[in-house]
Amino acid sequence: MASVAAEIVLDHLVHRWRGRDEDALAGVSLTIPAGQRLGLVGPNGAGKSTLIAHLNGALFATPPVRVGGTPIDRANVVAIRRRVGVVQQETDDQLFMPTVAEDVAFGPANAGHPHAEVERRVREALRQVGASDLAHRTHATLSGGERRRVAIATVLSMDVEVLVLDEPTSNLDARGRRSVVDVLRGLAQTLVVATHDLDLVRAVCDRVVILDGGRLVADGPTAAILDDRDQLERHGVA
Amino acid sequence: MSGLHFDDTAEHAHLHGTWVEKLDPRAKLVSALSLAAWIGALPQRHAGLLGLVGTGLVVVAALQEIPPRTLIVRASAALPFVLVPAVVHLLVGSFDVATTATLAGRAFVAAMTVTLLVSVTQFSAILNAASSLGMPDLLVQTTALVYRYLFLLRERASATAASAQARGYGVHTPHRFAVAGSMLGSLLLHGLDRADRVQSAMLARGYTGRFPMTRPLKMTATDWLVGACVTLSCAGSLFWLR
Ligand SMILES: Nc1ncnc2c1ncn2[C@@H]1O[C@H](COP(=O)(O)OP(=O)(O)OP(=O)(O)O)[C@@H](O)[C@H]1O
Ligand SMILES: [Mg+2]
Image 1 (tube, rainbow over the protein chains, first blue to last red):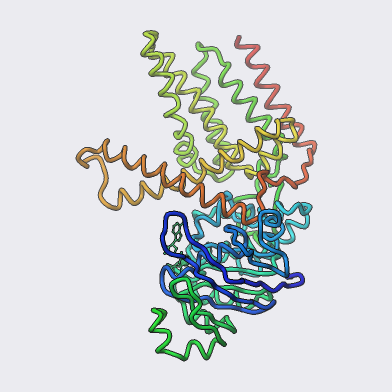
Image 2 (image 1 turned 90 degrees about the horizontal axis):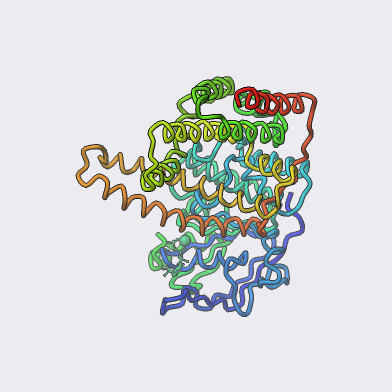
C-alpha cells in the first residue's frame, strides 16, 4: 500500500545533545535507496536513536537530511512525517489513545482523510500486523508482542513510504520476535531498523551499517557484515 | 458503538456492541450532563435519592458487562477533590457532617455517571459530540489534552502502585505516608516526562495541535428518545421535588 518511495540522504550528519561535550553523531554520510531494508547496528550509545530522530524531523540538522530531495526542516516537517513513520523504542510512548483502533486511526485522521478511508486504513494496518482482533482492546491489556505489533500498525496506517523502527524486538520472547520479523518481511516500504538483534537483521535486512561512537564504521550487504565476527566484536555488536 | 467497527472482531461484541454503546454520542453526552446537573441540583433533604441513582448506574453498567467494582473503583478517583471543599468548610467553621457527606455523595455519583459515559463511548466520539453540540473548539482541544494526560497518569499510577506492592509496600511499611508522598512525586515527574515523549510521538504521527474528528454522527429515533427521556425526567423530577 506504500506510495512512490523516496531516497534518504544523510550528508555529514552531526548532532551534539545539549549539555554534552561529545558528538552523538560525528559526521554520518549515508544514502538509503528507495525500497532498501537497512539494518542499523552498534553498541549502546552509538547514536542509533539519535540518527532515527533525524529521519522524521524530531531533530533538525544543517545541512538537512533529505527525503526524496525534500530537506527535513521546520517548513517541511509535517509533510515529511506523512512520508516517514517512526516506531519508537518504548511502545508505551507510541501508544497513547484509549483503544487500539483509536490509536491506529490517529495518524490517518490527522492527515485529514475522511472517516471511511480512516476506517479502511485502520482495518488494513491491523490486518497487516495480525492484530485485527485487538481493535477494541485498551493497550494496558496487551502483551508485549501485541503492543509492538500495534505500535507498528499505528505507523503503517499512515501509508508511509519509509518505516523506521527503533529496537522493534527488545523485550520480546522468541514467538514475539518471530511475529515482528514476519510482519517486517511482509512490508513493501523502505525500512530502517535499529537493533541489537542480529537474527532480526539477518532475516529482514539486505544492507547493514555499523555505528560506533557516532561514526559509521562499516557498511555492506547483510551477509558480509554479519559474517565478519571480528569486526562485530570490535564494535561490541556481537 | 458509533465509531470504528469491524466485523472480524465479533468475539469482542460484548465490549462494543451493546445498544448503549451504539447510541449517538450526543445523546449519551446530553443524558450524562442532564444527570450530572440533576445530581448537583437535588435538594439536600432528598439526598437519599442519590443512592437510588447510584444503584441505577451500577445496573446499567452491569448490563454493559462493566463489573460494579470497576465502576466504583474508577469513580473513587474523584473523591480527593471532595476533600478540598470539606477542608475549606472546616476552616471557615461551617463544617457540618451531613453537608459534607452529601457533597461527597453527589461527587461520587456524578463521577460514576462520567465513568459510565467514558466506558461506553469512545473518547474521540465524546469530543466529537461536544464539538458538534457547540462546545468551543479551544475547550474541546484542551479537554482532549487533559483527558489524555490523566489517562496516562492513571496508567502510570497503577504501574507504580503495583511495583510498590510487589516490593512489600503496605499498611505495615514504616513512614508509610512519607513513602507515599515521594511515590506521588516521582509519579508526577514520570508523568510529565512521559507526557513529553508522548507529545513527540503525537507530532510524529501528524498531530498539529488539533485532535482529528472525522467521525460522522447520526441521530436516530432511539437516540432522540433516550436523550429526551433522560433530560425530561431529570428536569421533571427536580421540579416535582423542589
Ligand atoms: N536527550 C538526550 N540528551 C543528552 N544526551 C543524549 C540524549 N539522548 C541520547 N544522548 C546521548 O547521545 C549518545 C547516543 O545515544 P543514542 O540514544 O542515540 O544511542 P543508541 O545507539 O540508540 O543506544 P541504545 O543501543 O542504548 O539504544 C549517548 O551518549 C547518549 O547518552
Ligand atoms: Mg537507542
